[in-house]
Length: 201
Ligand SMILES: Cc1cc2nc3c(=O)[nH]c(=O)nc-3n(C[C@H](O)[C@H](O)[C@H](O)COP(=O)(O)O)c2cc1C
Image (cartoon, rainbow, N blue to C red; front, side, top):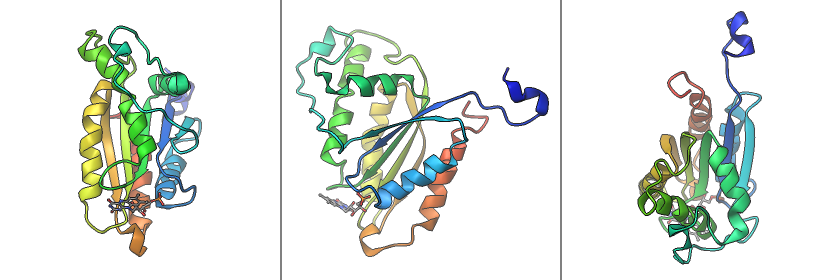
């Protein structure tokens, strides 16, 4: 039970959101989508952020150490893994680069391999104890939907090893011709609000 129960106000236990930002631009369409979602999170949400372009991310080199160890032997993402494991919500915000993720975010995603090894080599079920809801926000230069859809397709199997399910995806297209962003920003905000809906406790 939480303290607001007696006032009949909505009761939100403190939740942690990890925002994984995959754009090099602090004020581009990807950043705007993420800001719209973040603003819609209720006050009190603990927000952590990992900016993939802010530091070099080593790629997974398939050394296979995580097949016997419960960690990655490359130390650069140690802090990130802690944030990831304790998060209730994961938000991936990314531009589409060549129908895929920008290289630094792709490196972060490949580094989830340690959880794949935990699950499928060492038989740990689930490899991350805390269940999560995930949101994918994409920004594509062209008009077609295929860029965002391909990213969604790539992300879904990774989410399963993170004990996460995709609660919402927002694909903004036409960025390079300046398409109106308002509808996509509203969808991103709805995704932020939906993470707290009763069916997503
Ligand atoms: C290296 C590179 C590759 C790109 N590849 C694609 C692509 O495959 N499809 C597409 O729709 N847009 C592509 N774009 C355009 C970006 O997705 C688009 O400009 C996006 O709005 C950038 O968002 P941001 O400014 O928030 O990072 C590419 C841009 C770059 C720099």
